[in-house]
Length: 114
Image (cartoon, rainbow, N blue to C red; front, top):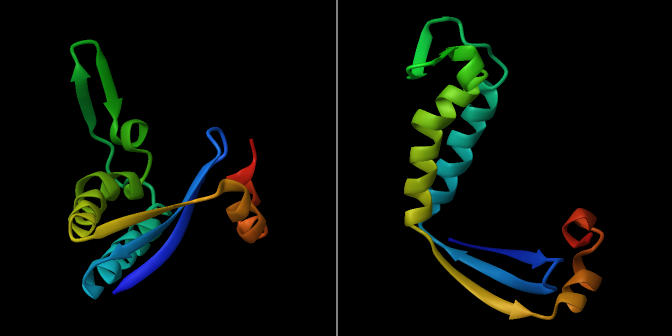
């Protein structure tokens, strides 16, 4: 499966189109796990044990991870997303920054703001 995206750097005025090639399950698995991660972020952590970072720093799980989404993201979502990205081949095609800005400004104006 292939997908096309674009990238721009408004500071250095560089731009490129990006072709991502990977097996279809890589894209599906990434979408699926990130959807679950998003759902989990709506729930607070139901248990409140304390964790010790250093000798003088002690936090509750809520203070350290925030919510179930943060906990899930660190231990599950990030690992699966990294697996998916290892399966991908990315090709960058450099293009003119001003031309890309003319073509794509309406889609994402914040990308081109300085």
